[in-house]
Length: 297
Image 1 (cartoon, rainbow, N blue to C red):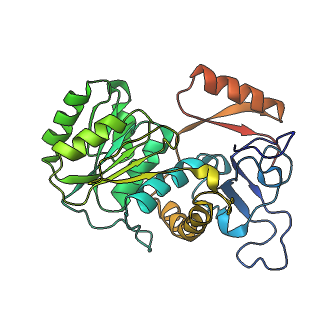
Image 2: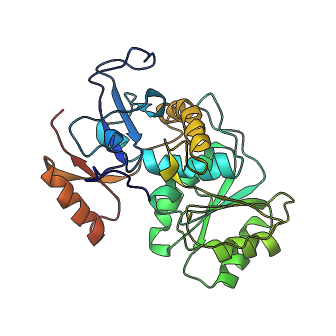
């Protein structure tokens, strides 16, 4: 159960300004603009309130090349894709903010036009892979804009998708990520019959469905909900990994090798605008991240 305090304060991604620091804080100071994905279900740390607590090593420091609104699109989506690709599939993120030299190997991202999928494409590209992404034809431009070298139709049958993966990659792939929660069977079949790479990795944002992955495939399921929950499964490791990745991810955001997502900013300012934002998201009116300004800067 993710919520462990009632009444619960909601929220995950948020951005704002540091108003106070503890005596052991060294990386941040009052007045710094920061953003993050907050630990869900722990009221002291969740952002749907005027002020909240945060660990400094789990905050991104905002650079001058992105806006406050831009920064609100990054936290959960980038960190979830990082868990899958850096933690689960073993990708190496360059430490200097530059893209790695391109490998003669593909990585396949299912759900490449979604918010997590877009960052997965960007990360794969930064780490030197050619990226093949699944999406609907109407959203192909989103995947390509984020760095996909090729796309295929996610609405096709499993066999048709696997055949297309084989055709495009020529079997030169061993790492797959499902950012949609609907692609498990495609991943297993593609890795079993279409991949010529010896070491195979299957990663997914689906942390709840029963999987029966063959022993020949390494399986990893991302669960950002374990952030700052050291007594829960993988909680300490997830928290440690994210704290180690954030300084590297910051460098790539500052260098522009990782970019914020397109978004819509709800008109007006105030907590009541959160309701409007939720309604806009549920309606699918904008088809992109929704950002709400709860306070004036």
